[in-house]
Every structure is written in C-alpha cells, then in structure tokens.
Length: 389
Image (cartoon, rainbow, N blue to C red; front, side):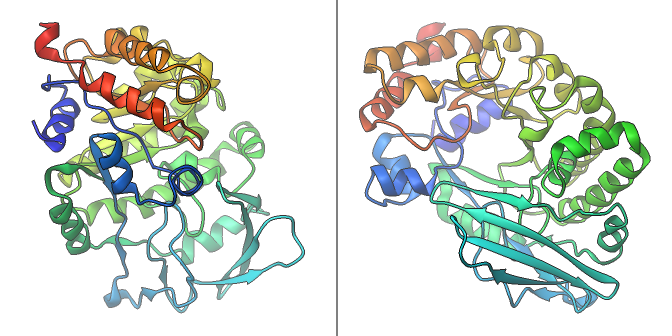
C-alpha cells in the first residue's frame, strides 16, 4: 500500500498491510533546533513516516463585500487568510518592552472596539489578554464577525501535488487571530477557561448563545467544503478534555454543538478527526457518539492524561479510527532504542487489533532524538497485519 492508502484504510476502520505511523503537526522549533531547519516533508521522508500535509485555504466572499485582511502580516498557527469587511477590521499593534514578542489586536466595528493580546516564543504562542471582557461583547461579535469559506481549488492543488505520499489534512476554521477548531474550544481562547466554566453555572444561556454564534460561523465554512479533496479535517481541542472540564459540561456544552458540525462535514463529503489532547476516558463514548471518523490523541498517563489504550480500544474501537497513544515524552528522549521499540509494540498490541489504528505521538513534541525517531518508525513498519494473522 502507499502511505495514503494505508492511512485511509485505517481511517475507514479497515486493516492495512502494516501499522500506519505518522505524527501530528511537526513543530518548527524542533526542525530548527534539532534538524538544521529542514522542511516538514523532508522530516517525513528522512525518518520514513507515513506523511501528512496540512493546508488551510480560506477565501472571502466578494459578493458580500468581504476581502482578504490587508493588515494580516503572516499566516499564524491554525490560521489562514483572515476575512475582513468594512465593518470587521483587525489592526495589529506591537507592544515593546515585553519579555516575549507581544501584539495587541484591535477588532474595529461600527458599534465598538474589542482587543486581545497574544504573546509568543520560539516554541508556541498564547493569549495573555482575552478578547471577551464584558458579556455584551458577544453582541458585537454576533453582528459583525465574518465567516471564511474554503478555497477549494487551493486545497485540491495541494492534494494533487502531495499525491500518495500521505494524507491531506486540515481543520475547521478557528476564530480570527487565535482559536481552536471546536466550538467550546474556540470560546476558551476568547475568555479565561475558569471564567467560562463558572459561566456554565451562572449564565448558561449566554454560553449557549455564544457557542451557537461560533457554530454558525464554522458551519458556513463546512458547507463550503464540498469538492475539497481533504482526507480528514480536525475538530475539537484540548479545552474540552476531561482534565479541563467535567463530563457533564462536555455533554451539555460541547457535544450538542460539535456533533452538528460533524454531521455537516459528512454531508459535505468530508471526514472528521476529533482532537482531545488531555483526559478522555470519562468521555470516550460521548465523543464516539458524535460520530467522528477518528479520535485522537489518546494521551497516556505518563504524559499527564489518563488514557488506557487497551480499554479505549475495547470501548470505542469498533466505532472510530484511533490515532495516537504513544508517549513521546518518555520514549523520544532519555531512553534506549529498545525501549522506544517496546512502546511501539505496546501500542500495536493494545490498539492495533483488527486495524482502525494509526500510531502517532499523543500530539506535539519539541524535543526528540533522531536515533529514537528512527527506532519509532522502523518498529512500526515491522508491525505487519499479515504477520499478525
């Protein structure tokens, strides 16, 4: 099988020729610090991974007076072209004298100005001042926020050029400047997560209204995906893991909104991988009930979460493809190649039975020994279903 065929077979819960092995986003920090600044695709080729190409191509709807944001300096992580109108403009303002690069983003509308502050270092970025400072800010966002559509031709060009080297992946659109694909997860980037959790008790109607606004924006994007040759798109995010919120909050404030988006994605001919970097065990069945095609990242206890891979396979492995499960913190650094290989074999034994499993680190990594990466991929490539049968 080609890498593309192998992973598509697993996504469809089939049995490929061998265990597919890939990773999530490859961090530029790691490529620069450890591998001399090679590209993501050179990384996949050097170590023999089943490849992934990520692309997010947004376009404005000119018939609605939309245009590409002229103030956008660069495409940030989980970003694409930002969509502006004369009533929704974003202006960046650099803030000097900070310990890290710091930018305030001004969201300018006819009924007021909102702002958020984002900081970054060589590894990642974060929100240091949230956009939502008053519940009435929702009214401004609901009235003026734009909704991107997919640039189908641009996505298909990337997919054609990548060919059979692996999967073409994307994600459901995030809020402008800084966000996540899922509705609850997006909202958690706009206000402090502790305040958001308290609001589910103090003013649940407001939270539901905000989630509905974000959901409608994302659905505009999803409805425009027809004809885009993505192999899988990501929804979700870590802020809905059971190490952050309770199963009750997930059931009431996450599943009702994201399940609608998954259904819409399927109607548009797309597959969805639901991303949960954090605790999953108390909400496994809730996620599977939303009917995504795949679930990730199955972060183990050694990485600070709670996943028992064998139990997860038993409980939901017949419903979705499982992606992840590998402990990159303990087995990409500070161990022997034999220990890395043993961890690969553990993952295969616990989750690989009857296919429907893609081996991957449980989300990003910033440090890894090249020797251990070679052992990781080589051992996975030896996990043959033909031999197992």
